Length: 300
Image 1 (tube, helix red, strand yellow):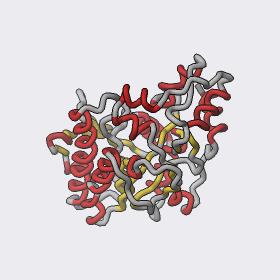
Image 2: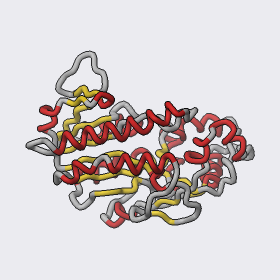
Image 3: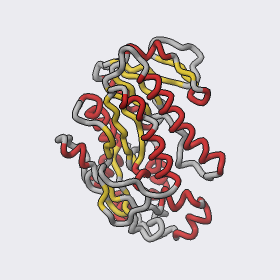
Image 4: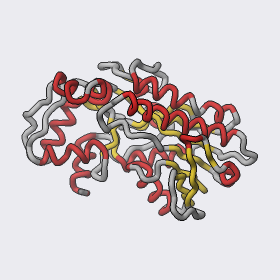
């Protein structure tokens, strides 16, 4: 396939580009700034609504992963506006441009997140579950809604709801691992909130399945089939490192440091299952937490 990829410098995008290239697919990176544009790169300006539409005619698939990081505090009004605008405006620009093409791609796979479900306690969630409440749930709902024009034009649209991606190369796990190595890890808040996780290798494999399987469209939860509580995640990580995990961070302190971001990113409970991928017969390389983290530690 010939694949157009935005967000190619991010954790997921960089690995996806490598794996697709190794498998023989041609990957063209959609970037905001490029000193020397060439056949392997396209420049766009989603903030100003600019995209070179004629060059989009030749793609079999478009994977849209770009967006302002939600994990960098503080969530000021300006930061929240960037989080929303970087996702909704860019997705709408792509969807509307793809819809007007003479030769449309077969599939438009757009990132979303399990933040769509909001804080749901112990409730078991799948792709049929309604959206939750809160800033991230609102962003995800608008983000996914921005793909509508592409779907109406007959393009197979997939909304990939990513959970917590575990990797040594970046993201939350990589940033907190040094804390655990020093024996300073501990549960966050009560530790009873559910964490829906997935390792990076399984994320990339799931995207590969999404691109090739015509039966997959609409929302797809890209998470392990075995969500765990924050306490389980903490104990497993510390245990595999042979370190204690006895320094909890109280919820009030998280809120004091991070404000509303703490409630929506750290303390929210989202027990999410990948029912659509499972129904399609997709196999996860690391469905269980302990072997997954053990493999990450060995690889690191």
